[in-house]
Amino acid sequence: MIPEFEYAPYVWTSYGIFAIIVAWQVLQPLLKRRRLEAELREEQALEQGDYAHDTKT
Amino acid sequence: MIWHNIKVGFHRLGSPPVFHRLCQVVAPWLWLAAAICAAFGLFKALYLVPPDYQQSDSFRILYVHVPAAWQAMAGYLVMSVLAVIALVWRIRTTEIMAMMGAPIGAAFTAICLATGSIWGRPMWGTWWAWDARLTSMLVLLFVYLGIMGLYAAFEDKRKGARVACILILVGLVNIPIIHFSVEWWTTLHQGSTISFFGESSMDSSMMPPLIWMVIATKLMFGAALLDRSRNELVEQDRRKGWVRQKLGASA
Image (cartoon, rainbow over the protein chains, first blue to last red):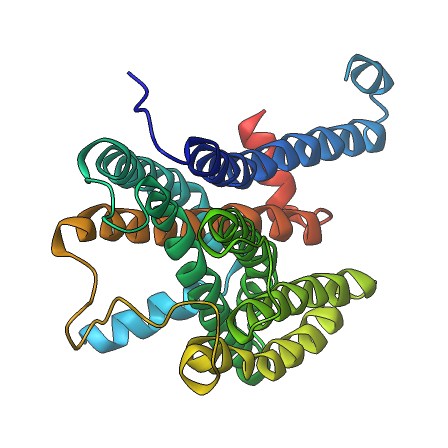
């Protein structure tokens, strides 16, 4: 059950901002790692002449 | 013997593959511990703590505002220590950690400023005032952004990190200004209510959620720092054998 507060919009907006920014701190490194790994695999595939792998990714 | 082992262990952290492995293993546990602490803290803050007799429920903003503010400053101190180590001993992993602390510190500063502004509106009747505490906190945000910008401006990342480390140490002067601003100047922002060594003016029933949230933000900072440092290390070493090896092993 969500508690009913006085000044509820101020309280929930603050907690919402906190949650969004913290969630971004979790997600940003994960997304970057995935992108980085995809790039590195692509580079590796190109160096090995594995163009089929490149088009798959 | 123990001291020798600690010293060797510390020096091994300078090795990119060892540091990468450490980040990979430790960061998820830190996130888990942070989530548990935050769950306790938020439950107590939103459900168990009674409203304040003057500020009513608006005081609950304190449980995200204060831990974020403290972490914004503590994060800067951590970065300063790392910057000194990076400048004196030229350890690359330390340089990377000092640089990767900036976006996380900026995030906590932004939380502090935004929630402070939201809290200020019903209590002070204004979203913003150019008082010493608020302004010095805004300066901290600009210092964090400056460090990020300076580091990004250099193509040679090591050179960029060294220059940005100097900026970190210059910006350190702002931390005592933030802390003592409410004592040195007359501010709209209230004075310190929580004291570690003296008596706090905050009721003891309001303290437990704050402690949980403070621990949670510390763990979040540590976890995010290790995650970002790991990525930056891989990006810098993308042509090196150990990265290729790890990539091959994880494929």
